[in-house]
Length: 338
Ligand SMILES: O=C(O)CCC(=O)C(=O)O
Ligand SMILES: [Fe+2]
Image 1 (cartoon, rainbow, N blue to C red):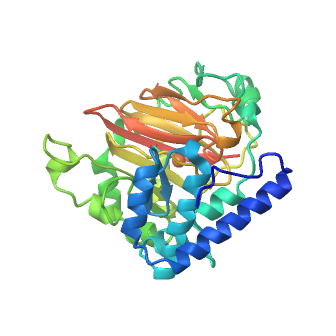
Image 2 (image 1 turned 180 degrees about the vertical axis):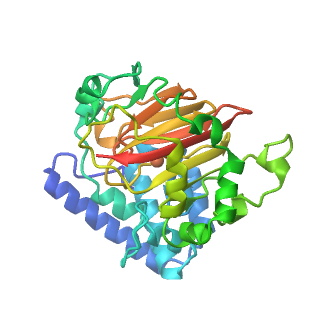
Image 3 (image 1 turned 90 degrees about the horizontal axis):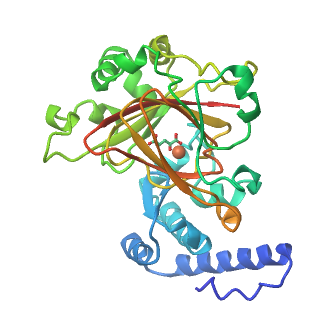
């Protein structure tokens, strides 16, 4: 079903969305009646799409500028997942907030229900705003602007810069009762491009792979720490960024992302607040793209963060992907504020 031969160019937005919705329904119906396998759908997808989006635990290639085509394919894949009860459903049921939903959430639901972006967050900006280490007062005007910002060296003095490592976290998880179970049941484990099934698998990988010795597959993973004994221990070694507003609300969960090379595929996050991320080790390159509704007035761009930098991003509105410098180990802590 071609969506690009849209016959609704001159219609009002309301009529356009109704037409679009009917088309989605038609695609759904076709998907339900067809005998295509998930592999065949992916093959169609690979031919049509260039960049990657995250759908539950499944990463699909998708050129984000081809918005509706990709969206339509995402719906079909979601429907198949629901109908055939594929394992990825389990990943979808636990959404980005770590909350289990009664109705399975998926990329289509997220994308279709997200608020339309006010393009003032990106209009006229062609790169990340780089600030020197700044006071709370000076930061005030930027705090809720949703503009991507780096505060240089703001985490350089945190003890975590020296202390946090693969072994530091392995040690905690191997020794704190219930830590692995909490990630599996209540927090969130992000496999990215690896095929690890759990954080336990990550902390059991062979030493050569941990060190990314030549010939080993690079790995990059993340997880949320929502289990109080683990969180309390970690938080002894880093702080809330000092420049955030004193009355900002903070999440009860902090994320860790670590590994080599791969990073995250292009995606949006379905979270409730803005995100800060402290780059503790390694250099990482972020690519940002505005959402499709701002494509005509805003540009995407790429930049690199250094150890000690704190990066702030509205990950609900900016599509983002990451890549670690070749041969370097990257480790970050990240949380939400709002
Ligand atoms: O740090 C990364 O590699 C990805 C992080 C991310 O996607 C996020 O914090 O929303
Ligand atoms: Fe993200």
